[in-house]
Image (cartoon, rainbow, N blue to C red):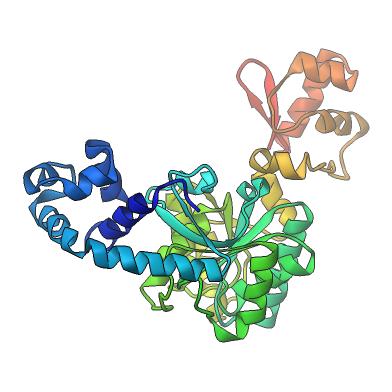
Amino acid sequence: MSKLTFDQLVNLQLLLSIEGIGPIKVKNLLLKLKKFDNIVNSDYRTLSSVDGIGPNLAKRIVKARQSKIEIENSFNDKLNKLHKLNAKIVTIWDSDYPQILKKIYDPPLLLYFKGNFEESDKYSIAIVGTRNPTNYGKIQAENFASSLVEQKVTVVSGLARGIDSAAHNGALKNNGRTIAVLGNGLDIVYPPENRKLRDEIAEKGILISENEIGTKPDAQNFPRRNRIISGLSLGTLVIESGVSGGAMQTAEFALDQNREVFAIPGNIGLPQSEGTNLLIQKGEAKLVLNVEDIFSELELKLKPVIGVQPVKPPADLNMFEAKIFEVINNEPKHIDTISQMSKLSSSDSLVHLLSLEFRGLIKQLPGKMFIRF
């Protein structure tokens, strides 16, 4: 259970039940009035003076007080249902709320979840795509998910038909962790054929929803769900999507959240490839052929779980170029350090460094510092 008291949670529910009030406006209210109780009991003039509230929302808050007992009874009923589901509530003010999700523009203030968060979940990659994939797409989703969890990276997706389901299955088949973000309440099984998969995720990973108990999988819930998928992840991999699919929304959220986007190229002419190919063409997604491409892009962020992935030098390097290439990584090194580590003179090192730079394998920085591309 959240560290917020029952009354605080009820007041939060009351505010979120008001049309036009979401996470940003609740934060503005708290910034000015400090406590939920102060917000709910403030007068019209005080409320309307808060940034982003204004007269109309102030009226709605004052009027909503009349519904507090009704909301309290309803919330108590929801807590009982959550208990029966062995599910819990976590709020953005709790220490076990995912830290990576707190960093997005509009993180959900309250999450319902079944399962347990782990420290390693902050090293997560989302895999999303169409509900109507090709066999190739499903195979790639399973393979990428399996390879990611092999390196202790958690796979995040939306439990939808198609690519999402394949990604979750790929993670579980390799005994890895996976997180499913739902567009409905935790008590609703959707899609119905994923009941077994859903139960396995709850047992070995986490089911998460910002939607309260009883919320049906209505279309308007899924765009907001998608911002949580990308928000929980260091990067989002899109495997097959139309140009207007939900996966493209998730990719857009990821870009807005300053997270990486990856895409697997697809056959020209296939509807399932139009979105991924467009992301690559516009330079919004990095083209990836295997998980090593993802690890290479996110090496520093994933380093605590995957370690340093060895990069083999190109086969056509001479002996001295290969020596230098092996001592250079993603941390800038001075030429004197490179010379010492490669056991070559500074002048010889410089000659071979310039050769490697010509080939686009390393980059020279100011101050005779060098870094690998």
